[in-house]
Length: 90
Image (cartoon, rainbow, N blue to C red):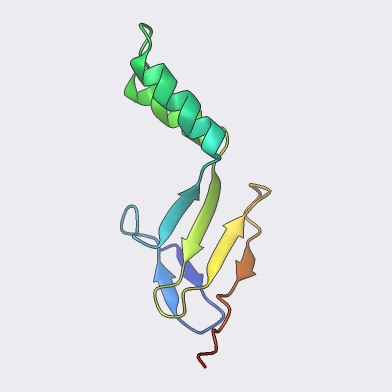
């Protein structure tokens, strides 16, 4: 069963289909391009739609406990962690 352990100790279960913790980071220019393709005479089908996304997406996991983001920027299964900054209220 695929699981992803966050540094905070929370374990993200990835074995039940697509989890709410799984995100995709897509460049804005690709979103614009896909939108244009959807309106063109040669509209993309569902397979082409996902291919256009998968070519450029960065896999992201978000921990529901601490909100850390884990990015696989190189696409090789090595994730880099980013933790939200703590804001100080005056």
